[in-house]
Length: 288
Image (cartoon, rainbow, N blue to C red; front, top):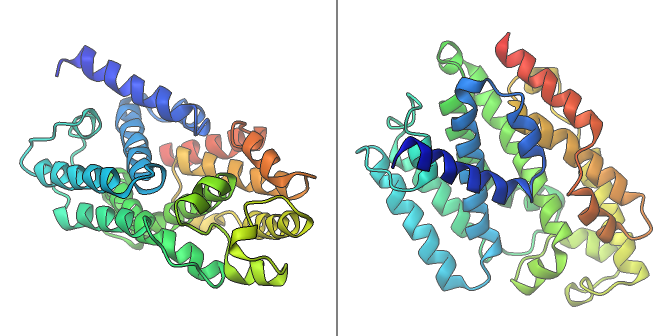
């Protein structure tokens, strides 16, 4: 693929996912120009995997897509990547040396999202998402944490921080897409929240005082989970910092609204000013 075609393909993925994750465009402005292409490609790759894990309704097409990615990841070590996103990552020194088992863990984690059991509480619900996002975060840390820090606990700390941000982001987006998630067999709220509001699973899709109260409780819980603190915050890159700040604001704003679900969907298309500040700080740290 020519450089011009490669750039055009990457721009197409950026436009595709930037419309869903508006913080992507913001964060890329703060990334060092020499690393911007790789950071963008990885962010878009995560979105492609999320699409297969959560958005493709029928099981067979989703499994075919994930199997294709498993085969693509197996080709990476041999320098035979075919997808524009994996090709864009090929210049990263650590990319070709990542053990294929790490990529397989990502695919297994994505498959695990297809038919999950209802979670009894918040901890176990978020742990379910971790099956996908923890392996992705470990790969992200291996690719983008400076070599001088890669042998220290900083790499693991960075992965923990990024995984937590992505897990909370997924929980928020699953809540926003409540009807689709329920249709596809996923329960975005834990069972204990439903029990406190005397809601059956089948009633969650229909607006009622009980549904609104359950959604508010869940959004308050997501919005009150602290953003990564000083130590963990050091491990966040520009995109993760933007997402963490924006999603916390989105959850808090929606929780206070008369119609939390509608407000959340509006909020997901917005990037608050505080996310700009968080992104700038993360970029400044990474360059320091």
